[in-house]
Length: 558
Ligand SMILES: Cc1cc2nc3c(=O)[nH]c(=O)nc-3n(C[C@H](O)[C@H](O)[C@H](O)COP(=O)(O)OP(=O)(O)OC[C@H]3O[C@@H](n4cnc5c(N)ncnc54)[C@H](O)[C@@H]3O)c2cc1C
Image (cartoon, rainbow, N blue to C red; front, side):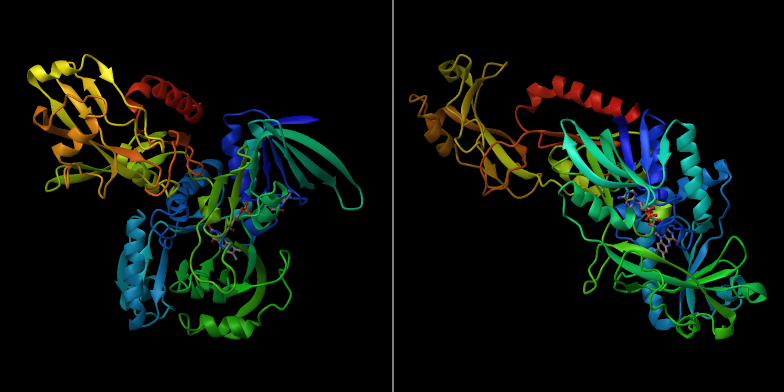
């Protein structure tokens, strides 16, 4: 049986980009693709647009990987001679009603870190695209087009040069955890003449596009259902292709289904009109019941009134792997996650647009900083190969900046009183009661401090607010009352209120039990390491925690 460090399922742009990245660092990388050639599914049935990242909700994986992937795709294409054109694009408001939406699109783009966005009027639109009719447009300088097919092959070529093995006509038919590994059953060859093989892999990456839900189900994970949504194209060839110079988009569908039927000047000089968006039955249903040319001409006329049915001919179609069911609305994010039950498996699910753009993203993390006082601050950016989130009470919020909402930190206040002066001789060292049976704290105890006083506390109470150290503090009488159990001589007059601290609890108020420290690499952004719920015994544990984190950093930096 063959052994692999990493086995990637799916030879689309996502699988090939991953193969290129991981084979840089690890040996024994396999990529298996069920079809005879790479990129035959969604990866070459698209618009080939290197998207900017303006459309997607802030902090979503789509936004983050698209903005980062846009830059990396240009760099990659330039370096490896993949044909591309950095054209910029226009998103056009057809009438005054749409202009407000254009503004919110600009704002969303800026929130996502897309640079250079600006609004232009009808006259400026005419200068750039003389045949387009609109009242205003958003100029998106970072958008452009790439040859999707050559991009897939360039990623695959580099992966192979780095030692990865790419096998086509190899369909994954079974996945079974086997000790620390996963046993991958393959059907290799044509349908009439195939053979079964098995590879045992330390890590399996599910980049199976439209079939990612079915591949996950082979491991017993039925979390996802992919609905194919067909995008159909027409094409303008010959001299009439001069009606469009670059990329022209309408405003996106308000319900998130698609970016709307747009015009894409291809690298070979034709104009693609599309894609449309329609839920279909069947993950290979590219052609059944295709729309008529008249339908394309009708919707294209809104922005390009000169277009005639005779300018258009039917072209190819592609299938979006949607996670949103037909009767729902909204943009659902890409899923990039380790399998909860079989963590050696990583699933990439719902890799619809901007999947082509986002595929190479994720080498570094761009960290936006606000430096200085609130009144006098400046923004700076640092790009890091590895980010360590040791943000204590705020570690959940820092993780959420990367789109990871796995944790919620509840501040639990611990308050202290202090015995000063001669009465501090009541205690010599450290005296504890038994801990709270429900795990909330170690109980109010006595701590002889290094400066000779005695701390009595800490108490434990869930509070609102991560800077709420003082509101509604307990009375001295409460401390005296609970301290008397072990130290009957103590009197209220021996005590004075001291400081308080906030524990970053992961256990909600109505739950019980001790929850462990979380020290983990982010499943979606593995260059990020999160330390969450670092409550007691955090002070004691740190030297060992630091060693643990250093190992994780070594994993990231190689
Ligand atoms: C109409 C349309 C227009 C688009 N336009 C753009 C655009 O302009 N810009 C952009 O950024 N994105 C665009 N996209 C999105 C982009 O094309 C996809 O996000 C991207 O191609 C997804 O790549 P993938 O590798 O995940 O999927 P795929 O290309 O589908 O690759 C998955 C591969 O896995 C293989 N596979 C599945 N199951 C198995 C198995 N059991 N064993 C072995 N192999 C298996 C499949 O055969 C397939 O080759 C568009 C998509 C569509 C449909």
